[in-house]
Length: 295
Image (tube, rainbow, N blue to C red; front, side, top):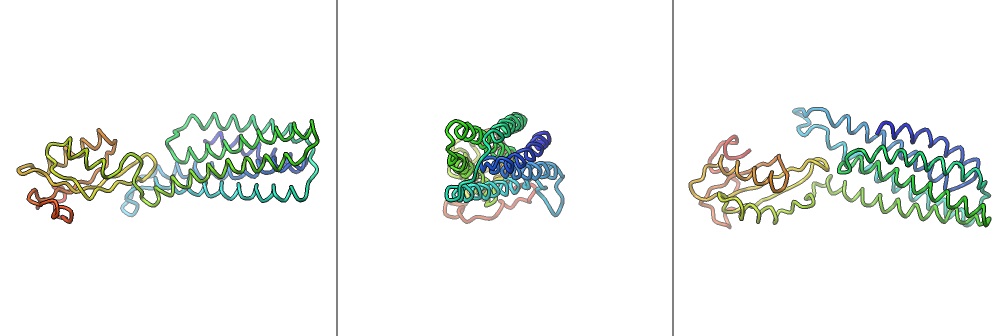
């Protein structure tokens, strides 16, 4: 990510200068996007490094959720950039600006090469990580912006039709908006502690009741994410008669780890004598200590 940041910052300066010299909105829009890219990558890099800090009594989950916050802010930045590009493009339709297509083409090609290099660097990281995903979306938007600028420059050189510049800028803005919405939606879901995909409570309940012999009933199931790669689960379990709470906890944890890939599970074992109605409201741990019946 650091090398991608260096590449983007260097060519961001090139595109700003080239955009001003040529008068191309497509180049300026791409340069503006690269400014956001630089900030996004720097923020993401900082979040990943800070996120490695150990947990403390005050921050019991550590700082790993900075990954999600950084990705959410990156998504909002993409929204702002797409709106800015659209507004500028509409103004260009009403007030056309002369474009130096030759300069525009040369700078756009250089920008495309830089974005391809940055994209290839970032694809070596984890795509499941939302910070890496947000950085990839930023660079992909830049790459599309460079392609649009090249197409616009060629059209202007061949036909002299300058409205192609703002027209393709709007096209890129719409693509960026779609990416921004997907990123904000996924990170917002995590920040609101929504249920992770594939971890629906009903599916977990059915699986445990059907496949764990010591479990008579499971309920009060809550799944959420700390990061895009770290999920948590809490649940209440009513066991069959005569089963030790520690055996119930061990069996449930093993099944959840194998079937749903969740290693951090908190199990509250309830009195086997509870009927279905009682269990729906049960809060005891079968008389066990927190180290035995709840963990």
